[in-house]
Length: 95
Image (cartoon, rainbow, N blue to C red; front, side, top):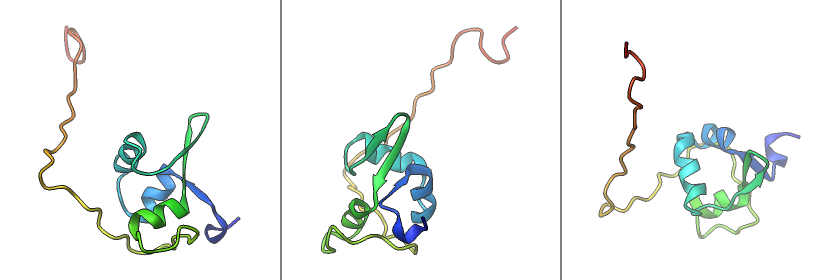
């Protein structure tokens, strides 16, 4: 099956196609901003849903084609998320 026949793509594959980070796509899945299908540990994203997300005026049964992705809309009032790393006492480098 080639890319034109795919109905869904994994997060890593879709991140490459859209030129965005995998973590951003996983955040969209986690916050349910984009539909996903979970098959065991694998997460698939339906390509028509991606088309709808990138271009709301486009019919939902269209499929994205490889090419430049539209920039994601951001809410400037939302504070940037910070990742906190907790280290265990006596971890790396402790003697």
